View (cartoon, rainbow over the protein chains, first blue to last red):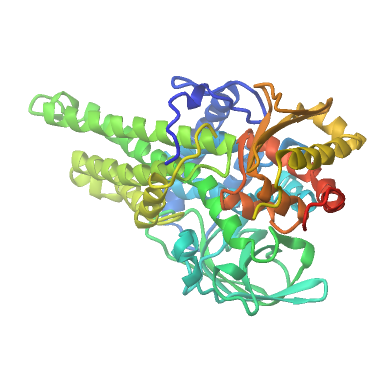
Length: 418
Length: 129
């Protein structure tokens, strides 16, 4: 098991904008400033649009709000400064995503999915592919990305090393001279409808299963790419998940990331890296539900006193608040470790997501209970938090997949001081 | 059987590799500009190698290295020979790195010449490919 480092926040946090270390009581100055900026945007610009985003047609997309968020830097948070990014690392990303998700988790995921699409390029260590693609996210207009791995017959197998041999991919890549030709289909691809670039995983012809999985960066306006229908989701409606079809798409060989057969390793690394951010989104959902419940319990009078003055209600609110605090500490620590360890530690990142997913559902459910009928009515907003909490549990590792990762880490020997 | 049979042989090859790297002005000036220093923790056989723009030090690492990279000498051999890709090695836990991921992202592309140089250096030292 990876050693639990109780001094993690006092350890070296060397995210690019500053060397200031996070502590148990405060964020580094750069992350605190980012949080303030994103919170202001979320409360003043995003909040008034939440109902519209939630009720819009599944295929609608608000480029205007996305452009404003892009101008805040949300599409380039993890890109290094020398490539035009802001170099915040996972800690900054996670803090920003909590702020967005406390208002609208779907909107937060637009940027989370973009970072997931950027992650393979960052993890590759390939200066050429980084220089060709990452600066594109720093222009005047927003550029979005997606990560395309899930298929009709392949999903979680690719996240569990011991199951990887059973992952049968449909999407194929075959080498033709200085290109690869990609054929196949992906599904449930967040940002698939709107992304400009995708990191797409395909099996080399003749190599089914994880051993042949290879990652390519593909401009989604390339000939042969077709974007399918948008999934009509229960929650997270501000971001669009679609199928992506690849028919004879020619990809230059230099757009391969991590080498032939390196896709499974890129995927595992990016999942470990991304889980802190996903835990932050779930924590944001829980916080949004908590804030709504706090306001309601302060306003609503029953039995001659405010709801929060009733002992049973106070107990519920206190438990909800404790869960949000614990979840935030877990994702902050996981994000810090993801910024300072390669590979990102499995135990801390997977437990952070496992916990955040669960408490988001519990807090939203309690919030709904506290608000009674109003909690069940769309006008009041609480039911949306519950819908989104249920969605958080599914993507980037279900509880079942996370449990396997966590227990595997528990039973894995640590190698001492490293 | 291990690629490196003695500690002396491993020290000689890996230190020579980075001494050559440090003769490259781009490598050295980028390390200096970005404050990069690396503590390589090699196992089987065990030794530590500290690399900063001023040189290579063996078993004399300051506690302040920007990055610490741990791998076995077999893994190092496979990596620098081009038989093992960095993302694969990292995901499999065969290479573990402590320090800022932002620094790792800056440092990794600088290492490209090491892949070109290593096979000849290893061969000259009598290390089997």
